[in-house]
Length: 473
Image (cartoon, helix red, strand yellow):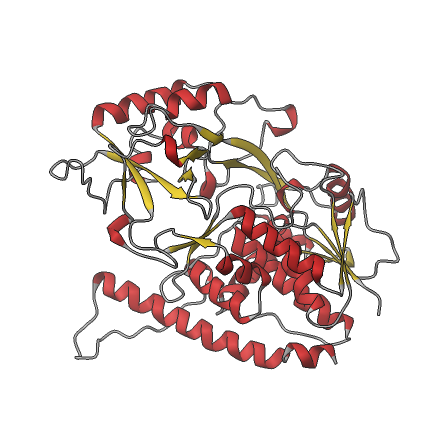
C-alpha cells in the first residue's frame, strides 16, 4: 500500500501520523529539524512545546477545551495519552513536563512499525507521486513550502505574532514573599489546589511595574513583520499594558480568589502567577507573561516582582511570527486544498490556535486521509462536538466580509475552541426541586447541556466511522 506523507512533526503532524498508522496504513513523517532549525524550537524532538506547557482546562463538563480533551481521548489520541502520562500539577488545568511529553511522542512514533520518520525540509510542493499528503507545518512553515502552497491556492497568507513566556528556576524564587495556591483553591488533574506560585503586588509596586513595561525596549520588527497583527489570545504583556494601566489587573495579574498567607489581612492589588513547567518541579513559567521585550530589559523588569528579586531565568521570553491560511476559502470540508485535493492541511496553519486544537485537527485530518486511502467516504464530526465545531469554524464558520464589501479585509482569524462555536442548545430552566435556575447556575446548566450533547454525538460519530480494526481490514 502506498504511504501517506505527513509534513511536520509538531502536535498536529504527530497526531495525524498516529491516527493513520493505527488504521494499518504506512506513513512517512517528514520533520525538517535538525537539518533546518527554527527560531522557536530548542530540540529535535517531535511534538516539542515551544510556548506554554499547559493543555489548559481538563474539565469536560464546563469547558470547551476540556471537552476537546475528552474527544481526543475517545479517539485514541497519542498526544493526550502522552500528555496524561507526563502531567505536572496545574490546578484545574492539564499541564505536562515538556521534555517527557516530547520524548514519549517521539518514541511512540519512531517505534511504530508502519511509521518512517525522515529528517529534512520539503522545499516547495511535495512530489507529484505523493498522492496523499497532510501538511502540518505549524506557525513556522518554511518559506519555500509556504510560498509554494500560497501560489497554488491563489490566496495570501495571514499572519500574527505568537509570543513566548519566560521560565524561572524554582530555587531562585523567594518563598518568604510568594506562596502556593490555585485560584479559589481549585484542584485539577494531578493537582492539590496549591499548584501555582503567587507573587503579590501593592498598588505602588504595580504602577511602577506598568511604567517599566511601557518604557522597556522591545524587539525591532523586520520589514516583512511590520504589518503583522497580534492574536488576542496570546498578546505580549507590554502590549496588554499599553491598552490601559488596569488591563493586566483584569487579565493575567488579577488578584481574585487568592489569599496571601504571609499577610492574610491585606488584599493584593495584583498577583503574578507561576506554573510548574517540568515534572521535577525545578522550573516555573510566568503565566500570561509572553513578551517581545529585549532580553536585556526582561530580567530587570521581571525582578521588580515581589518574590522574583533574585530570579534566575532558564529561558527568557521571545516572539515569532505565525502564518496561517485563509482556510474557509482555500480548504474543503475535509481539510483538502481545493486547488489540489491530494494536499490536506492540519494544525495551526489552518487557523486553529492552541495545542489541543492543533492535535484535534491533526486527528481529523489523519482519519479523513486514512478512510480516503481505503476508498471510503467519512463524514466530519457533528458541529455539536468540540472537534466538529472547530472544523466548522476553520472551513467556513466565520462571517465573510467579502459578502459585505468586496474591498473589505477578510475576517477569518485563528480561534481557540470555545462554546461560542457550538450550535445553541436547550438547557433546563428548573432544578430538581422545580426552582428556576438563575445566574451562574443557569450558565453552568447551559454548558453542561452542551457537553452532554457533544459526548453523545461524538460517540455516535465514532460508531458511524467504525472501529480502527474495521477500517484497516
